[in-house]
Image (cartoon, rainbow, N blue to C red; front, side, top):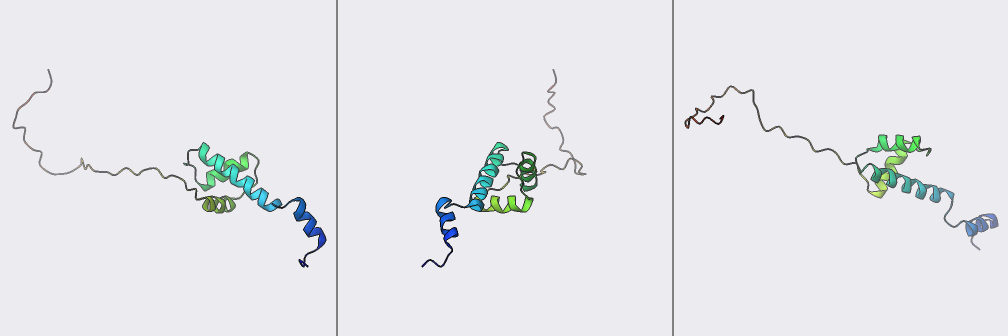
Length: 103
């Protein structure tokens, strides 16, 4: 009736989630844990390396796809915007007040 073998049906009956889905869910939990331990600053290569060092076999590409599915991105540091050019050739304004700030 279902057009599947009886062993497949009974296998599903005893394990409805499946091995692959369970492993993916466990990997998602480990990735999320490592991500929040590093406060979101670790990128995919470093995160994958930490997972491998802790005993989880995962490649950078698999970690990247799982992070993308979960919507996790590494936080990039803010770039410093240079606003001062101290090596200019402009004239320096004259000291009109003649204030001596040293006592």
